[in-house]
Image (tube, rainbow, N blue to C red; front, side, top):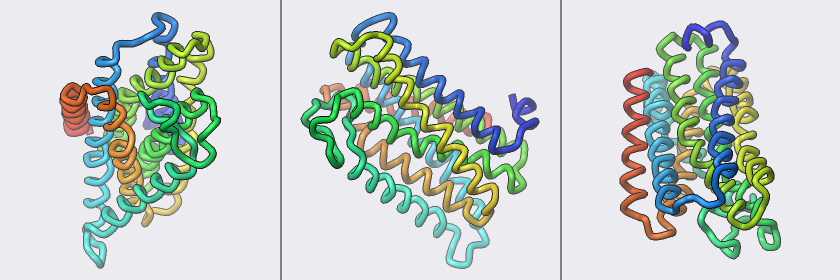
Length: 271
């Protein structure tokens, strides 16, 4: 797979990789054609698993490399990682306050953001998962964009591992949107459409991230950390609470740990 990707420019690599992650979201959404409901314990465990993958990816694929790149920073190697990480969280916090959305498993009355009241449940759910996918797409794009600044085969493998991990955790996100809509009586086709549509933002965000760091090399450690901070905010504010709202706290917590370990093994072994 590494040999295949080496034939493309890093921006194109990011686009191809996030088309895969979008496809995984669509794959999860296809379950609406097989069943109208999904076991709540299974859904919560998959959401927990997704959170674990995102947490592990935030360090091994983003924060760790950012710190290594900043060894000659005059303030300290920690500064780009710390400042970028906090800015990423603040950025997602701002979007969270503005963008109307509804967390998976939450009742319609718990919708957040401006003008969320009166919005359709389908719209709010799609916007919630779209909020997830912005930092995920940015993270993949930035990882591939780094290759334009002297990346090695090992760093390409790391970017591919990140895309693989994001793709794996996108599967339950597709389910988390499509299944509640199907349960509310929406047709299979529409439920699938909304479920896969939430992943469409990832290729767009990936191209933006890849182009930005391809041309502005000093931005790279800040950009990597920014993506990590945004992902951690999403996990803490939405993924973990959504996985535990129905009472399956222990199951969701253990699933998160399994997801963390799986992503850690992928990143260390392959990246």
